[in-house]
Amino acid sequence: MMLTCDEIVEEVARHPVYDRVSIIDSVLQGLMQADREIENAWLDEAEKRLNAYREGRCGAFSLDQVMAKYGRTA
Image 1 (cartoon, helix red, strand yellow):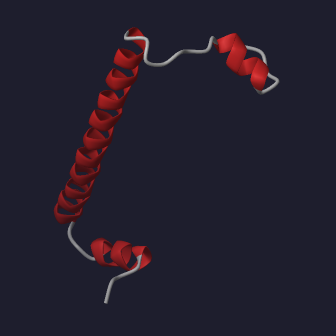
Image 2: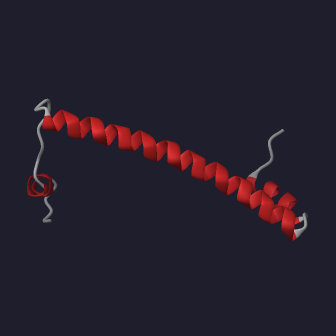
């Protein structure tokens, strides 16, 4: 059976402060690792798009063109 978020918080609150800090640190480290993976994936995608643009395989729109399309000004 999986605990709900509220149950997890209640369980963690029962532990000494040092243990709570350790738990929080572990959770944050896991999140930071996931963020690095996402950041690296976006970096790879941005490099692919820039290379495609530089090689003439795709075009680009100016900020003014994009904003005009959506009825806004830059």
